Length: 307
Image (cartoon, rainbow, N blue to C red):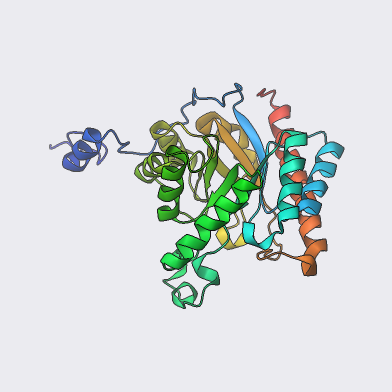
């Protein structure tokens, strides 16, 4: 009887595809088990907490107040409305608050295709264009947004366009941006396999936002491919699938370290672009995100898992 070899077997029916991937030193399969990552942050930590959608200084302060109340250490906050929708004063305030509290402040690069005059992003098959930059004028606008924010002291941005990632990576390498400038890919810039993760790392990404619906085995394969920190939603926004995976946090840390654990709030309205007209919602959801992170920290503590 002929053997029925697995498509993962290097001598099986997909041996040519496996050979090509092996030649390029790219993972050819998702992990079978839950292998423990040996990588760590520079300070030796396995995980850090990120609170996303922190839209402005008042929301940042709400995060700090809630974190103090719950005795939770927050390591990074990110914002989604864009640099250009904050005044210079507000940007300086956020940078100052971050420095004082040793929290990384990451702001989204402003323009994106979904806010431009084009219609592709509103079509059922065109949503993939949402975070991209539509036209070269918009690329220039985005670069200006980053350069302006860097002048104000910002050292971390969220990037949603692969071309912009390349430009910013080169700018940092050539000294047009500070050497310590952090380039964080957006969850909207789809990263869901090892080859894409490696490409983004090569283009200059400092930290990779993974797609929200990846299994632990799929995440483990990406971790085996790259060394930069991974950003994983433990509770994802409704418009990105809305996964709630708090009980997976111990294993997420196991396979993905170093990993930023991110928490948004299900069943809440969108905040982008933010402003005073929804300030109450901005601050209340910021506090609830911290509460969600504290619940996950409670799970890690319950099982005696130390950072």
